[in-house]
Image (cartoon, rainbow, N blue to C red; front, side, top):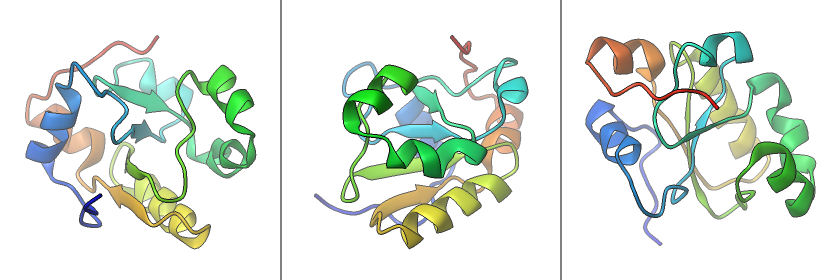
Length: 125
């Protein structure tokens, strides 16, 4: 598996947002708070608030899937984080790197850039 760079740009996120197959390869994780994601989410993204991310990653696979609705990613899986402005997604990136996750990356433009550039907005479940 080829590793991704540490950051992705809007065009790369657009490709992930438009997937119709392999929607979780790599998973796109929105680390904003719940009150932020109710107004919209990047299509194909999953929601794990930054405040719960470390605890979520400590869950066993079955509990994680039951709670978050998708397969728990492993330390060697690719993962992409975003938030509102890039600050929290960078914190998620740094934290998971520190926990030994080797293929994580950040979308630094995050929601502000995505929405400003006309990215398709999905509805939060």
